[in-house]
Structure formats: C-alpha cells, structure tokens
Amino acid sequence: MSFNTTILTLFPDAFPGVLDLSVIGRARAQGLWSLETLNIRDFALDKHASVDDTPAGGGAGMVMRADVLAGAIDSVERGGRPLLYMSPRGKPLTQARIRQWSQGPGLIVLCGRFEGVDQRLLDSRDIEEVSIGDFVLAGGEIAAQGLIEACVRLLPDVLGASSSVAEESFEGGLLEYPHYTRPREFEGRSIPDVLLSGDHAKIKAWRRQKALELTRTRRPDLLPLKGDQAGSNPADKNKGKPQ
Image 1 (cartoon, rainbow, N blue to C red):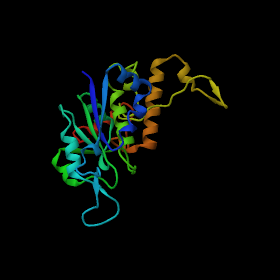
Image 2 (image 1 turned 60 degrees about the vertical axis):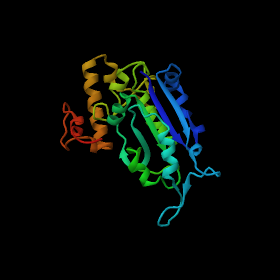
Image 3 (image 1 turned 90 degrees about the horizontal axis):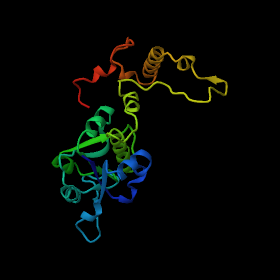
C-alpha cells in the first residue's frame, strides 16, 4: 500500500522540492509514496482570488479565511489520513509520532501563510497542529517537506538497511553515537581504537556510553532520571504520555 500525501498550499511550485531527491525521490518514482498538491487559491470565492482578510479585533498582518480553506480541505478524500496544520504553536514533532504516521495510509498537510488561519477552521475540521521547533517560518511549506521526508524514510524498502533506522537518534530514547570513517588520521585526530578492535561487544558498549554522554550533555530532557545508568531504557519515560 502506498503512502499518500496531499499538500494544501498557496505555493504548489514549492513541491516536490527536496522530496524529489535521493532515496526519497527514488521511492516516489517507484510508487512507494505519492504526492499531490492543491492550490488553496483555486478555492477562493471572489474574482480577486482572495484567500485572506484583516484580523478580527485589529492587529498586524492578515489571516487566512475559514471558508476558503474549508473548500480546499473538503475537496480532499481523507481515506483515514490525519489532517495536519504546520504551526509554531502546535505539539512538538517527535520521532515517535513520525513512526506512528509512517505506518498509516498517509497525510494531509495544510501549509499556512500570513499570521495564520481562522481558528474556526481548525475547530471544525479535526485538524492537528504540529510544530517542528520553537521558531517561526514565513509559511508551512518547508516544515511540511521535513515532516513528509521523516515519514517516508521509515517506509519499507525506502532505506537500504533497516539497522540504519533502528540505531539513529531518538529510536532508542537517546541521541545517536558519533560516527567515523577513513582516513584513520585526520588533522591530528584518530579514530577511537575500540572501533578498530573488531570486538563487537566492546564497540556496542562504547557506542551506548557515547550516546548516553551526548544525551546527558545536549538533551537531558530525554533521560528519565538524572542518575540514568547504562542499561536502562530512556524511552520508557514517554510511555503513557501523549506525543
């Protein structure tokens, strides 16, 4: 079954963009996933193709109209796909959520512009707001591309080795361990001896320890306790919590 994505945007020419490159683009060419774009302006209700208006109550900027967006959304066959709106006030995007969506039939993604969209549209169409970080973009297109790429790369047959997914950041509740390759010496820095030892048990233990150290230093929020020890499962802290 193909993973089907529909993007509602004022800038359909922004797609496929980076989604047409490398393994993600090849996967689309092979039919492992599909991409459809709808131009929101096609659903405008006046001769000027207006999609926005001044904010009720005053203020700067413009707000995308609920009636125009509703027409665009209602023209799409949902097919069990979640409807997402890329927004800095949404729930933070997590790898766990990405994994869940990648196992479904696909996504419908609304890309906002201006100051945002009329709240009545969000309330009436069962839309989930999603944030890719604590910062603001000019629109949702770049965020949507990141979201879709993260999902597609987890689809069966998209990446060559399943281990490359299983051992990366967040999959085990930790950040990923450091990587090295040739040359053995680079500007006075050597590959750690343990990685050249051929002792797979020692290599596994070293990688686990480095992953813990990086996580403690850069993302301590991922660890369940300050006294986390190797062998515990940091992912357990997310059990039972909404993503």
